[in-house]
Image 1 (cartoon, rainbow, N blue to C red):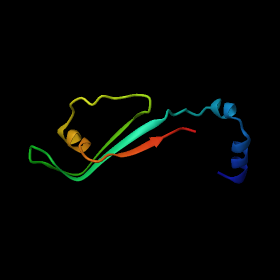
Image 2 (cartoon, rainbow, N blue to C red; image 1 turned 180 degrees about the horizontal axis):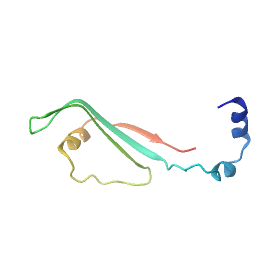
Image 3 (cartoon, rainbow, N blue to C red; image 1 turned 90 degrees about the vertical axis):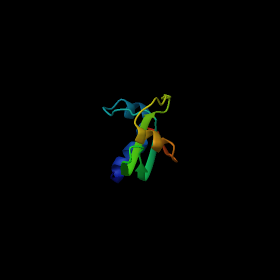
Image 4 (spheres, helix red, strand yellow; image 1 turned 180 degrees about the vertical axis):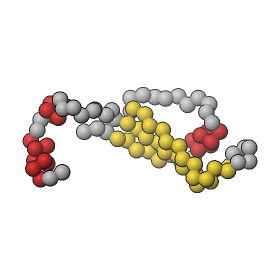
Length: 86
């Protein structure tokens, strides 16, 4: 943004910003699991396996079954990120 655009943004009210044609994004939680090498029960090996789950903050999602790789990744340390719209 240029200096003039920043000044305009600072001076504009929230109502004006919300009434524009911009899409409002809900607050989101993001979880990321990663394994550089993941062994499956079939003997297969996954290199660089990554699983990302993104959901709105106000929703709770119940994990039910799923793939073996996803189950194994969820058992590992998760990296968390929360994104809030402004």
